[in-house]
Image (cartoon, rainbow over all chains, first blue to last red; front, side, top):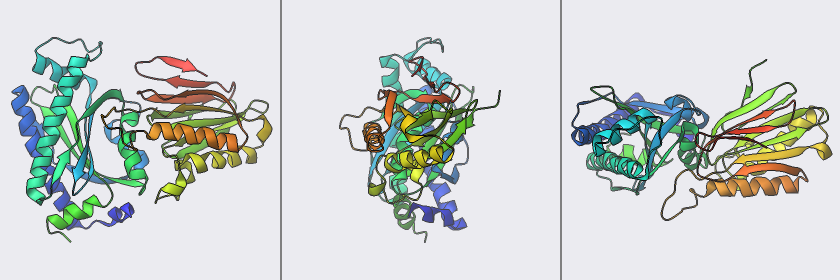
Length: 205
Length: 161
């Protein structure tokens, strides 16, 4: 059933891109206010990829990343992931907590907690915009975070989708701060079935 | 030295010495190896879900513990391995994220590991080593020259079983 995603029309793809744009735009603003830096955002890319290829979107399954993960509950369930290289995570912590970090070290519990709060704010603003745009009620779970191999972190999302199909629809937006300190990827990955609900809600057949 | 054979998610590879077979970034997934030490033939399957009978999309047997292990067994036997000599090793099955209310999907690593063990027992294959659970990712590699299964992690070092 999720493989019906393979036949999205140009109009549907545009609608999904717009959804990603609205959501990520709102999160980029929130992030920019948090760290008091200008944040640039790419046009979201929408891709339908085989589950096994999802880790390649962030540099391969072996790449070390910091990931903040939330489940989305409500009318259109799905997963939200904010992935960034470890350096970006340290940069964020430095700017939020005002402490100098060596990137050789590990993230302390306090650092992780600060990052989770960022995840919470970013995902919250993304979902708010998405809710507003689609008139669907969407609620984020509390965030969880891990610093580990991208493949291992993405397992959580892949497993969810794997029960229903072999492909994932990935709405990806890249963030870049003005001084290149943060280079993150924001992913919205609807559960199978949710995409149709979102498309219906915005009136695209 | 030839490059190692790469196994993706829900995928498998078989080979013979001096091949190595590697799979990157396992979280809740489990990487199961079968190895015949006499003729040095073996394989690695990277499963992501436990039970094929509970999933709607079950066309790919390598995706599940209950079908991926018999699939790998068939493949190594067709290459000349002898079933009674086979030894199995398992790694992975972690829980990457800790949530307050642990839902089914969060405990998937544990279920993957349990069903993988059970399937091996049902196939009457001896389990010679395992490195399962935890909250971290693993990259696994079997050396078909020695049968050693090397497990690499980011913060927990490296070990061989």
